Image (tube, rainbow, N blue to C red; front, top):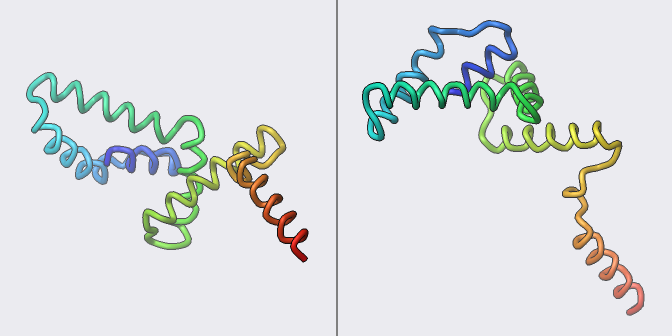
Length: 125
């Protein structure tokens, strides 16, 4: 809820306070069931900072860039597409850092099973 405006600011270079107002008021209403007064304000401030950090640091930064690029081509995307883009960002970062495909794309236990299946089917012929 709070990450959207920070992601948009990360991509566009400016924070849209008017657009973020709805997200902040929604978060405030949700959090008002958990806290009130100074505690609510502090919790909301912490969550706002956490949302900003989530979209601007680490592998999430690349995912935000991929989602933004996709949104520029299409006006909306669904959750499945966001998850696919986030996985692609993580895979690309790993490959750039190591020069290899991520191990989770071809885990050894799957590769081992596939080679055993190929060997056993070849032996049956």
